[in-house]
Image 1 (cartoon, rainbow, N blue to C red):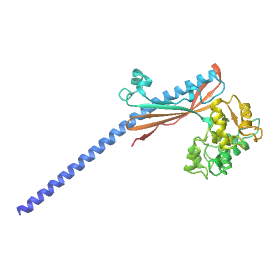
Image 2 (image 1 turned 90 degrees about the horizontal axis):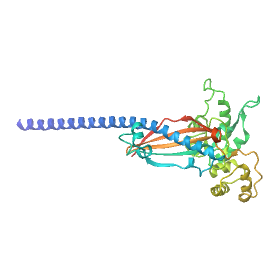
Image 3 (image 1 turned 90 degrees about the vertical axis):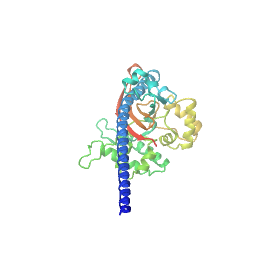
Image 4 (image 1 turned 45 degrees about the vertical axis):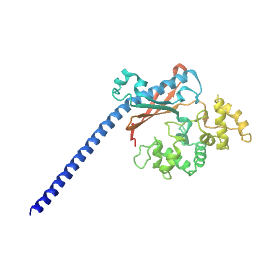
Length: 326
């Protein structure tokens, strides 16, 4: 009898220990979750503050560049990335406190860069806008350029015509009554039959969606985009053009004709190319990072005018996206 009582007592004690362990583990997990939630909220608030600072820095660099140069190229100050820098060192102790980084400014870093959006093919250029009483229509040269780009990326070239038709149909639509919504971001391409997430990811370094049609900037585009923009030019020849551009940037499109004669002597004289040497739209990217997570920042800036008349504006600013580190 006593032996049975002792056995029951041992079992009871073990159950109590197990229950206590479970309760402690649950409380610890809840505390960790609450701590992470607070940290994520604080990081997001700090990200919003830093996004404004990063964008304003980019706008200042773009205005300064436009006051001193009539072309845009990759050796200008705006094109030089800001390497990861401690927030406290970048802002200074007082400004860091005002921006809410009093405790974390020393451990947190921010890096950013400005990218020429017109280094990529703008899908809005698939359409010729309405003008002088003529309605908007598909731009044949834009479709042909996009077909070449898709082919060079081993993607379905027929997507060019499908995309142009979609964009044209969406221009006057609001998404109601079967009318497609206008494209705003590259991810919106998934609404068009034939696009897959893998295809969109492959396109992102080479294509962009801007509010209005634009040309490709000769001084900032990579070999893949230049080869698509210049009929008959191979990616290898476009690479040679990019290498030559490192020696001296293009002053204008006429400068391209001269250099093409040396790089691709058999190429016909280019006519009506969707190319220029000055840009209007720029992507601003940043990353705010601490020991636990990183926050990605992104915005699109438009610049107009030249000299003292230059002005910039933020077209859109994406909500900061948080990613926990392993």
